[in-house]
Length: 605
Ligand code: NOJ
Image (cartoon, rainbow, N blue to C red; front, side):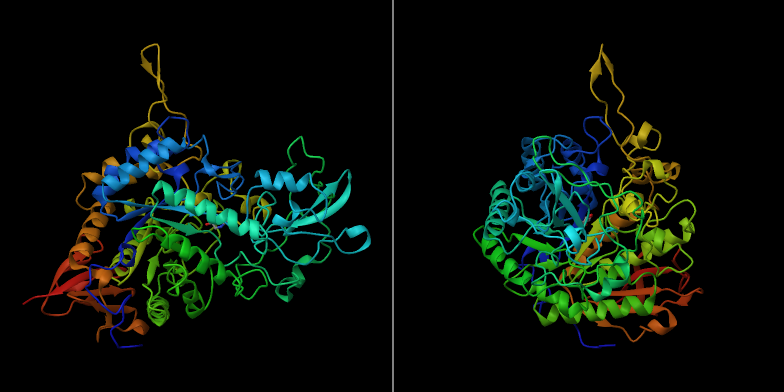
């Protein structure tokens, strides 16, 4: 364990640094945050109405998952028009109003950029379908001829990250034609980043949102844009494509005007094949060529004032490889998935902290920390499993059910570990309430394409996307406000787009707000203390108390000593320290720190 003091930047305590070096950034998943018009789907006016709540929570910025025009085949990560707000979420004027209100409250706004793929309903893809092989319209995507007799086999053996084949064949005037690549769903064709027009268009999209005043971008699949030249087969997937002739999923047809359409898969193709993890050794992830794109975008952001930033969603290993995305002339931040994947385990967490700080320092970038997001099982639920280091791809009613109480206890303990660290921290909406995953969602309600593309083997990500509970006694737990007035009577809001578990009543904002022991009160206190102690700009020094092998994690950051007990029995609190905050009201009591708990301690003078 490295005993030297390490932090995000050499000048610890310097508050003149860009805001993002130490910011707490709250992820909003727009469809599930707050429904302002009562149609059952969250929206931009809903977000605006809850900005005072976020301001009181004490966050520095919000990141909005996509709200752009989209057929919603992947909940908005399938963009049909990068410059238009989807009517489900409102209009550009609603976005502008929300942005102005957030800025008025001192909250920065980051929007999602999805550059790896568009929707198949994007005008470019529609043009590609109606254009011949070799045309400029096709060259914006990755169209290739098939292999074997009559090109019936996909161009290579790549599998979709969502499961099934990564290629779908189109028909050319009724006859089988070329195939197009989609690392994700059939409805998410990959763009060709060797095409200058694609590069110019995405620069223009950046400027469109920068001109409106956004503070930054979360870059989706930042490690996927460039593919290895020649699109070679990948041995990591060879075993997965035996007998594969075409995509097993029902492809979506192109617009009615299209001359060419997407071919239906042959009957009898198995409904599920194993899918690869985001394996960074693949020829479609973490190619060196992506960095040129981010150097280019870095210059675009520099055209604007006010420390605009980018954060990379890049599932890349090891941390030193991830650090390449945050070199001085590329992005500003990258999500730290190593920390998220460590689970509730002192050794794994200490290793992730050590390696992340070292890698970030190696390129002079701040570290970031995250425990949950819209793609992962919520951390209190993961930590409530028999093995709290497992990383299930969703949880269904037939799967092991987490222990909600112990999971929440560990979840709050992990939060204090995270918020005491130097750097920037990401929170996922609802974690401030201690929300668990919806683990018993019925198949009929599931919407995540990963559930369908894996034939249900992966339960998918719907469980962490259940709409937030605002009022314990209201229908839909107050997710939606009234849908207007009819004959002088308020029209009740429609049911939320995804059912919420009954237990959400216990986690509703109105109930937690007035409870001094609630998770919401705990987060508010922790965030206020974090700001006061300036831990984001601090330096980490492992304490002599740190013994990950014995389930104890202990580090100092400025005046703060963070102590966590991963073991099954209480441990002694050090003498001469006062407890500033403990992960639960009774966690640090009578000289000891309870099992599955953590505390922030400050030396008494
Ligand atoms: C990562 C996003 O976080 C996820 O939700 C999405 O499905 C994929 N990228 C594809 O855009």
